[in-house]
Length: 406
Image (cartoon, rainbow, N blue to C red; front, side, top):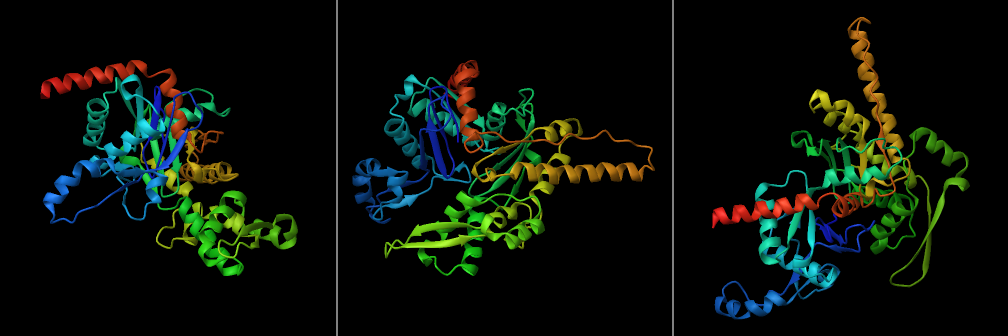
């Protein structure tokens, strides 16, 4: 998820790439590569002979997924590169085939997860400078870019790089505190609840109630229902009552096509609309091993940070990623978190016998129209405006280090 000076790409389960200054990525491709494994391990002579051919015989992205006779590999797992040889081939394709760019003519901005190792950063720079001969490179932390993207929100008074980023995609949710552009790595927490879990939970709810869904399409149907109808409710009990008293007003209908018979099927979508995203706030509904609501995780993360940055972290909680896009998600999170913070302040006052009067803490969750691709947009915005000097410094630093090592 990223942007760059001229070209940009971000690397996770999906790679998002495009040109700096744009509001959305031009391409979103699965971060996988299909390679031909033509010879067995023992056939060394055959493997050596075929190596040159095999190096050119590969596919990436959606094409890789659709190649049953090839071996599909994922060089990136959880945002960290695990196979650098495949990664270099993957990057070659996205630069030349998708961006259609000559790398030596463009500056690049890439993104990295919060706890990426210095070795990984160095390998990335080595590939970009030595294999692709780029003139400049900037490697940005995803959470910092998400903070920058939030500057488009009317809720943001001053542009700051201090805040708490809640980044929730398909596979995992991270709560990341950032102070003055630097991630407080020791305080990061991850939540094993994200978009995929909401889809599975919605699928389970539909299976228990609806019999008209073709079994092989149940997951696809659940995903469509989640994306089209789901929202976060302020109060579970009141929401159930709304559906029970006036179902026709709240129950929606979803129509799909049976992939085998090609006939239409229609299902009612009721409680699933609000119960799916509710697992952020009641994770025990879907995962008995994890019971901490997202509001408590955010509070714990901020409380673990140095005391002098806690107030700014509460005041600037930024949402990033597709799974934060549910209607009223930000409002519910802000309300629940505010209750937790106020209860702590009240307890402090009571324990002091009324002698301490803690100053109220401003809790603000920032929502904005760039949330879905927040990291990419933040990179695109920064790349097109403020980081050219940083890029030039970075390349000179890399060249100096290379000279010393050589």
